[in-house]
Image (cartoon, rainbow, N blue to C red; front, side):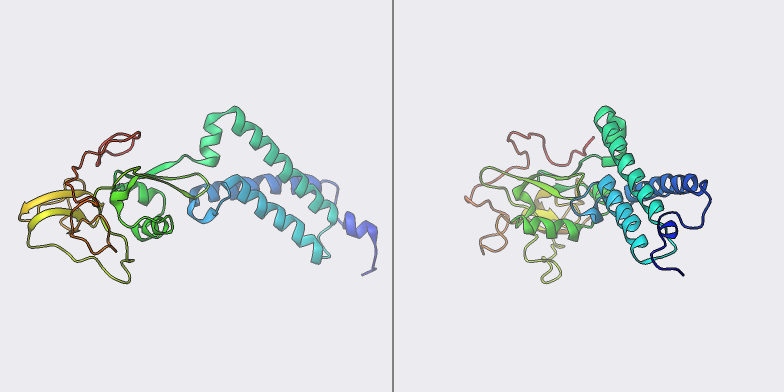
Length: 259
């Protein structure tokens, strides 16, 4: 191999038609990569959209290989980088002009919690477990689900958490983490407010435990306003009796699935 052979460095020993093949390979691989990232979901994308994540991977691979592979001509890598950037600009323009393209590439927000009740089907579609949700809510300072009015899973993979402006009703405790201390199960019935450990719905009970009106499971624990406060279970922070219908600017009652 002759060092500093500029013909080999920029063009290699390929036919000029190979540039067309490089362009075709770039379009196919970039489209396939974008599709797979879209199907993978938002959870692993950190704060990048699928399009931005695909751009990072495509540019990283195109820029990295010719740096240490002598058989990869620089002109080919330059063409790939130019095509990736050009496709990004085209798709960014289409996202602005066409809402259906924006929905396909960026996705849409997903409602995960409404008035302290989890939508388990939405969690499954978002590739999130209850433990994942509880962890993120604890990071946001949430101690029990009754504090939560709405939770949305945004396009960038982050959670938007909206809490009640005033005293929160009792709800399913998520502190301490269930891996460290599982909330006690209620199986024999009793009197007071119980929280479903499967969906978070709160139900007043006076007698045997019923199936959850939201999910149909029989998996209850005591609803609490402050899991770490040591106060009585099933009572609000002000000692009053909170009903299940919650008001506020977001409105709506618990247990209504998002459209």
